[in-house]
Amino acid sequence: MITAAASMSALGLGLGLLLGAAARKFHVETPPIVDELEALLPGTNCGQCGFAGCRGAAEAVAEGTAPVTLCPPGGRDVALQLAEVTGSDCGCGAAGGADLSGMAEAEPMIAFIFEDHCTGCTKCFKRCPTDAIVGAAKQIHTVIWDACIGCDACVEVCPTEAILLRRKPRTLQGWYWEKPAQPFATRGTEAVS
Image 1: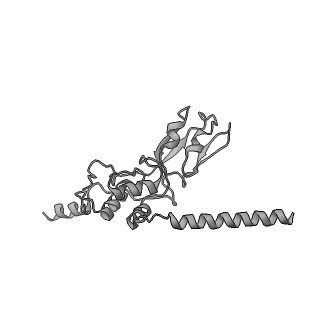
Image 2: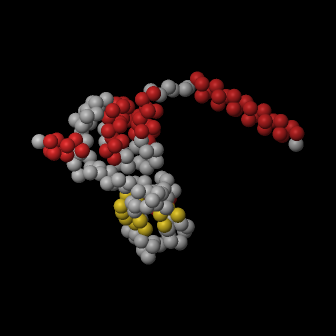
Image 3: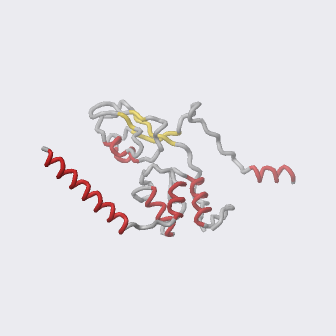
Protein backbone atom coordinates (compact mmCIF):
# COMPACT_ATOMS: atom_id res chain seq x y z
CA MET A 1 0.00 0.00 0.00
CA ILE A 2 2.86 2.38 0.77
CA THR A 3 4.50 1.48 -2.54
CA ALA A 4 1.29 2.29 -4.44
CA ALA A 5 0.91 5.64 -2.67
CA ALA A 6 4.56 6.53 -3.29
CA SER A 7 4.38 5.57 -6.97
CA MET A 8 1.15 7.57 -7.47
CA SER A 9 2.71 10.59 -5.71
CA ALA A 10 5.84 10.35 -7.86
CA LEU A 11 3.73 10.01 -11.01
CA GLY A 12 1.62 13.05 -10.05
CA LEU A 13 4.68 15.13 -9.22
CA GLY A 14 6.43 14.13 -12.47
CA LEU A 15 3.39 14.91 -14.64
CA GLY A 16 2.85 18.19 -12.78
CA LEU A 17 6.43 19.25 -13.46
CA LEU A 18 6.03 18.25 -17.11
CA LEU A 19 2.83 20.31 -17.45
CA GLY A 20 4.47 23.28 -15.74
CA ALA A 21 7.45 23.16 -18.11
CA ALA A 22 5.13 22.83 -21.13
CA ALA A 23 3.08 25.81 -19.96
CA ARG A 24 6.20 27.97 -19.72
CA LYS A 25 7.60 26.83 -23.06
CA PHE A 26 4.39 27.21 -25.07
CA HIS A 27 3.02 30.31 -23.31
CA VAL A 28 1.48 32.81 -25.74
CA GLU A 29 1.35 36.46 -24.71
CA THR A 30 -1.92 38.19 -25.49
CA PRO A 31 -1.98 41.90 -26.22
CA PRO A 32 -3.05 43.98 -23.20
CA ILE A 33 -5.87 45.53 -25.24
CA VAL A 34 -7.64 42.15 -25.32
CA ASP A 35 -7.78 42.07 -21.52
CA GLU A 36 -9.03 45.65 -21.46
CA LEU A 37 -11.76 44.91 -24.03
CA GLU A 38 -12.80 41.74 -22.19
CA ALA A 39 -13.18 43.74 -18.97
CA LEU A 40 -15.63 46.10 -20.76
CA LEU A 41 -17.83 43.25 -22.04
CA PRO A 42 -20.58 41.88 -19.73
CA GLY A 43 -18.71 38.62 -19.10
CA THR A 44 -21.75 36.35 -19.31
CA ASN A 45 -20.47 34.40 -22.35
CA CYS A 46 -24.00 34.21 -23.79
CA GLY A 47 -22.85 33.79 -27.40
CA GLN A 48 -25.23 36.37 -28.93
CA CYS A 49 -22.28 38.02 -30.66
CA GLY A 50 -21.47 34.85 -32.58
CA PHE A 51 -18.35 34.02 -30.57
CA ALA A 52 -17.91 31.29 -27.98
CA GLY A 53 -17.47 33.78 -25.18
CA CYS A 54 -16.52 37.31 -24.25
CA ARG A 55 -12.79 36.51 -24.56
CA GLY A 56 -13.24 35.44 -28.20
CA ALA A 57 -15.29 38.56 -28.91
CA ALA A 58 -12.62 40.77 -27.33
CA GLU A 59 -9.90 39.13 -29.45
CA ALA A 60 -11.97 39.65 -32.63
CA VAL A 61 -12.59 43.33 -31.82
CA ALA A 62 -8.88 43.84 -31.05
CA GLU A 63 -7.92 42.26 -34.40
CA GLY A 64 -10.50 44.39 -36.21
CA THR A 65 -12.43 41.40 -37.59
CA ALA A 66 -15.58 42.19 -35.57
CA PRO A 67 -17.40 45.50 -35.11
CA VAL A 68 -17.60 47.21 -31.74
CA THR A 69 -21.39 46.84 -31.93
CA LEU A 70 -21.24 43.05 -31.59
CA CYS A 71 -22.60 42.78 -28.00
CA PRO A 72 -26.42 42.98 -27.80
CA PRO A 73 -26.62 42.67 -23.98
CA GLY A 74 -24.06 45.45 -23.57
CA GLY A 75 -25.92 47.74 -25.93
CA ARG A 76 -24.86 51.18 -27.02
CA ASP A 77 -22.93 51.99 -23.83
CA VAL A 78 -20.55 49.05 -24.24
CA ALA A 79 -20.18 49.81 -27.96
CA LEU A 80 -19.14 53.37 -27.12
CA GLN A 81 -16.60 52.15 -24.56
CA LEU A 82 -15.20 49.61 -27.04
CA ALA A 83 -14.95 52.34 -29.69
CA GLU A 84 -12.99 54.56 -27.29
CA VAL A 85 -10.50 51.81 -26.46
CA THR A 86 -10.01 50.64 -30.05
CA GLY A 87 -10.03 54.12 -31.55
CA SER A 88 -13.01 53.51 -33.87
CA ASP A 89 -14.98 56.56 -34.96
CA CYS A 90 -18.70 56.30 -34.37
CA GLY A 91 -19.49 59.91 -35.22
CA CYS A 92 -20.81 60.43 -31.72
CA GLY A 93 -17.92 61.95 -29.88
CA ALA A 94 -15.91 58.77 -29.36
CA ALA A 95 -12.67 58.41 -31.27
CA GLY A 96 -12.34 56.11 -34.41
CA GLY A 97 -15.08 54.28 -37.48
CA ALA A 98 -17.92 52.43 -35.84
CA ASP A 99 -21.42 53.28 -36.98
CA LEU A 100 -23.77 53.31 -33.98
CA SER A 101 -26.62 55.09 -35.77
CA GLY A 102 -28.54 51.86 -36.39
CA MET A 103 -27.95 50.50 -32.90
CA ALA A 104 -30.96 50.90 -30.65
CA GLU A 105 -30.63 51.72 -26.98
CA ALA A 106 -30.57 48.49 -24.98
CA GLU A 107 -33.57 48.07 -22.73
CA PRO A 108 -33.23 45.69 -19.77
CA MET A 109 -35.09 42.49 -20.69
CA ILE A 110 -35.58 39.22 -18.84
CA ALA A 111 -37.04 35.86 -19.72
CA PHE A 112 -40.53 35.02 -18.50
CA ILE A 113 -41.92 31.48 -18.41
CA PHE A 114 -45.65 30.86 -18.74
CA GLU A 115 -45.95 28.10 -16.16
CA ASP A 116 -49.16 26.66 -17.60
CA HIS A 117 -47.31 25.91 -20.88
CA CYS A 118 -44.09 24.60 -19.30
CA THR A 119 -43.63 20.85 -19.68
CA GLY A 120 -40.41 20.57 -17.71
CA CYS A 121 -38.28 19.44 -20.66
CA THR A 122 -35.12 21.06 -19.12
CA LYS A 123 -33.91 22.40 -22.47
CA CYS A 124 -34.10 26.01 -21.31
CA PHE A 125 -31.97 25.82 -18.19
CA LYS A 126 -29.33 23.76 -19.97
CA ARG A 127 -28.86 26.66 -22.42
CA CYS A 128 -28.93 29.48 -19.85
CA PRO A 129 -25.40 30.95 -19.52
CA THR A 130 -26.09 32.51 -16.11
CA ASP A 131 -28.10 29.69 -14.48
CA ALA A 132 -31.06 32.04 -14.11
CA ILE A 133 -33.65 29.30 -14.74
CA VAL A 134 -34.61 27.04 -11.86
CA GLY A 135 -36.45 23.77 -12.27
CA ALA A 136 -36.12 20.03 -12.69
CA ALA A 137 -37.16 17.40 -15.19
CA LYS A 138 -40.95 17.25 -15.54
CA GLN A 139 -41.33 20.16 -13.11
CA ILE A 140 -42.37 23.74 -13.78
CA HIS A 141 -39.45 26.12 -14.35
CA THR A 142 -39.09 29.73 -13.28
CA VAL A 143 -36.64 32.58 -13.89
CA ILE A 144 -34.54 34.35 -11.26
CA TRP A 145 -34.86 37.96 -12.41
CA ASP A 146 -31.64 39.20 -10.86
CA ALA A 147 -29.57 36.60 -12.70
CA CYS A 148 -31.24 36.82 -16.14
CA ILE A 149 -29.44 38.88 -18.78
CA GLY A 150 -32.10 38.58 -21.48
CA CYS A 151 -29.85 36.72 -23.91
CA ASP A 152 -32.73 34.93 -25.72
CA ALA A 153 -30.98 31.53 -25.60
CA CYS A 154 -33.81 29.86 -23.67
CA VAL A 155 -36.52 31.34 -25.91
CA GLU A 156 -34.99 29.69 -28.98
CA VAL A 157 -34.97 26.15 -27.56
CA CYS A 158 -38.36 26.05 -25.80
CA PRO A 159 -40.48 23.48 -27.71
CA THR A 160 -43.79 24.77 -26.32
CA GLU A 161 -43.00 28.49 -26.80
CA ALA A 162 -43.65 29.05 -23.10
CA ILE A 163 -40.78 31.54 -22.76
CA LEU A 164 -40.65 35.11 -23.98
CA LEU A 165 -38.64 38.22 -23.17
CA ARG A 166 -40.26 41.01 -21.18
CA ARG A 167 -39.11 44.33 -19.81
CA LYS A 168 -37.26 43.96 -16.56
CA PRO A 169 -39.69 44.87 -13.77
CA ARG A 170 -38.77 47.87 -11.69
CA THR A 171 -38.08 47.00 -8.11
CA LEU A 172 -36.05 48.77 -5.46
CA GLN A 173 -33.11 46.48 -6.27
CA GLY A 174 -33.41 46.67 -10.06
CA TRP A 175 -34.66 50.22 -10.64
CA TYR A 176 -33.15 52.18 -13.51
CA TRP A 177 -33.57 55.66 -15.01
CA GLU A 178 -35.46 56.16 -18.23
CA LYS A 179 -33.35 57.66 -21.01
CA PRO A 180 -34.44 61.21 -21.88
CA ALA A 181 -36.15 61.74 -25.22
CA GLN A 182 -33.59 64.36 -26.29
CA PRO A 183 -30.01 64.79 -25.19
CA PHE A 184 -29.55 67.51 -22.59
CA ALA A 185 -27.22 69.46 -24.88
CA THR A 186 -29.91 70.01 -27.53
CA ARG A 187 -32.51 70.96 -24.92
CA GLY A 188 -30.29 73.72 -23.59
CA THR A 189 -29.59 75.16 -27.05
CA GLU A 190 -33.29 75.21 -27.94
CA ALA A 191 -34.10 77.15 -24.77
CA VAL A 192 -31.36 79.69 -25.46
CA SER A 193 -32.27 80.39 -29.09
